Amino acid sequence: MTVAETLRPVIRAFLGADPPLQMRCWDGSTLGPDQSPATLVVHSPTALRRLLWAPNELGLGRAYVAGDLDIEGDVYAALNLRDVVAAQDHRAQIALGLGGWTDAVKAARRLGVLGPPPPVPPEEARLKGRRHSKERDAAAVAHHYDISNDFYRLVLGPTLTYSCAYFTTPDTGLDEAQASKYELICRKLGLRPGMRLLDVGCGWGGMLLHAAREYDVRGVGVTLSTRQAELAAKRVAEAGLTDRIEIRKQDYRDVTDGPYDAISSIGMFEHVGLAKLGEYFSRLHSLLRSGGRLLNHGISRPWGPSSFDRHSFIERYVFPDGELHEVGTVVSALQAATFEVRDLHSLREHYARTLRHWVTNLQANWDEAVRVVGEARARIWLLYMAGSAINFDAGRTSIHQVLAVKAEPGESSGMPLTRDEWTVPAFANA
Image (cartoon, rainbow, N blue to C red; front, side, top):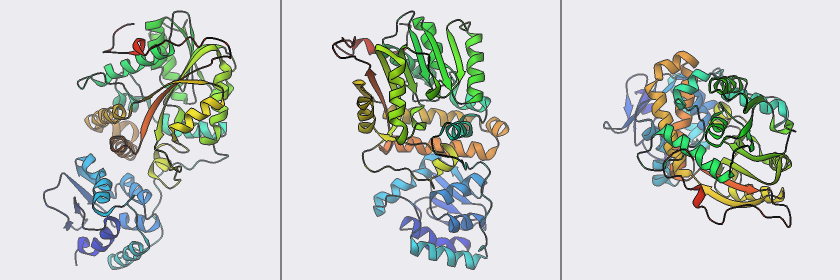
């Protein structure tokens, strides 16, 4: 009996049927259609042992990261397997049930691969300490952002912007769309020359550089990433803006030098945690002047119970301790901190498009990416970005910009009557 025939019951336990894509095993035997946009390649029997010890997406993820499992062809077609299965079998996820686990044990016994759990890939995060303490948050950020500035430049392009872009036309390129995103946020914040801007989670400094160049503001950026802070400061110096922009390696909870005229938080909110939302928004509220605006740009999840899973691939390999919040919860937390919420803007389709640009960049620079961070890390980023693009397309994940103002009782909010001044046709200097 071939390996593919031996594994057929296990695959059916996962999918409810034979795979809609071709699967090729280490002995050359196959399951699924010959004509397939993607092929799942099982290089090693160790892949099956990983599934026995983690019979869900974590086991599959470990097998892929370690090179026991591979994808040939269209990565999106392979990762879209979940939706294909759901349409056929009405399943919410791909995982082994009790019967499937029994079939997997039988198959493993026949193939002679039963044994202790294989070593966990070293890229997997195992954080210690109290969740969302300052020390643990710093470790979580370092795990994701401190891998290599050169790697991020390959993936993100010259803007070094690691957040959802804003595509004003179907033909807009990634760099222009990132500039348009910054321009949109500057306009929403109502920036004017001489204002003081705090950028929480400033990354490599893109928002501050744009705001200083185009609006002549003075800015402070804080990040927990050592490598981001170093390169952001270097970019500020190269732009000749050290007199207007200060970059700090600092936790937002330690910022005390308000008041600021405006605060932006772009792609950092996912690291805050539900238990810390009140503290987060209260801290930002205390740092704003009366009438100052906050723009919170963060990934969100649909309504319902929290989807946090400590055994998920994203949690273990990509964003340890990351949490997504339902946008209604975000609005309520802002109002509880006495902000007045003024605008809500979904950019879900924009993030799917952004991620596909990043995947294209990574694939085009694959050999260099592997040289810089190693093959396992490059595989992690390919899997997470392509899978995230599919989730944004499918509506399982969204992203919202929430604009709020610190409006004191009896005082004008200073907000415009319409959204006209926020409109960004295609990026041009304000």
